[in-house]
Image (cartoon, rainbow, N blue to C red; front, side, top):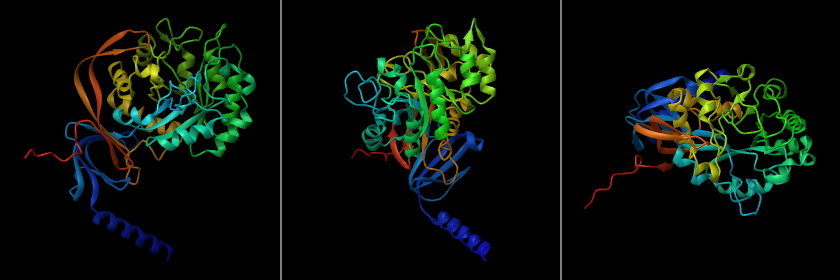
Length: 410
């Protein structure tokens, strides 16, 4: 009887979906959906906030039809390293201050539908961050909770070992487990492992990954120790192609260090985290050429990076596309890969039943200059531009009116 009821329910649901009018129908676009191994011209149908079908040809009536001929249709992009605890507090760096950015002004125009704030708040001020930024943003937001209780306030605050409490950090992470997806350690400037150990302990207690941004130290802390001994499979090292003074680099004398390759094989995730000071061609190009490709592409978005060589997610993706990654790899590193890293597997793909987050991109051909954080320019011949972004079934960015009705001048 139960089996019959289930079959009847399935058939009714299927027939209901078949008879419903589609809200948004994207036609003739080149769909790239890494999770489902789709790389072909397909149509995508949306009803409400869900994708209901991806198929070679969908002929059902639709309220809005978008012709994506010549364009790429991909899952909404996921940027797992940004800074969005914006505010007006003086001398608070990326924690309720001026350098952090409200996401909606910088996400949709680049195809991004989901962001992760990378450590702006700690356990002491996360509730304020939630009420301020989360509550007032359309962009889907998550956070890495800083191991420093006061968050990423810069200066001496981030050096306060006494404010790095694994138990309290894990407690708040579990309290807001729907929003907090990991623990963040950043900018610590001394040659000791206590901050790393405490961040990993908080991650263990909360059952979530840790993202580490090594600060500078003399003597430098060993990346080999960090990657092979301290971090667990599933943890993240960000700024993987950085080349700052006071820390080791994954490429030395033009060669990828063996421990870096070994770490990635054991499950440590390498995140781009471009930022205003953490992406150098001298690191990225030989690393990618020798097989150390990123697991995720992210921006480290803040006022400094967006006005420097980083600019936005589409520009970082384009940069990687011109220095060795292919288009499918770039899309995977910006959608399904980061969704898995933050354990939000309901995102980052175009499966039937998934939330309707979609980016429509053009792959423009021409002559373009890309700049790293050292001010070095590399010329490329292709560039991704976001033409349209859909969040939860709603068009939130439309560069050239793909979804708009044509105005007839009377």
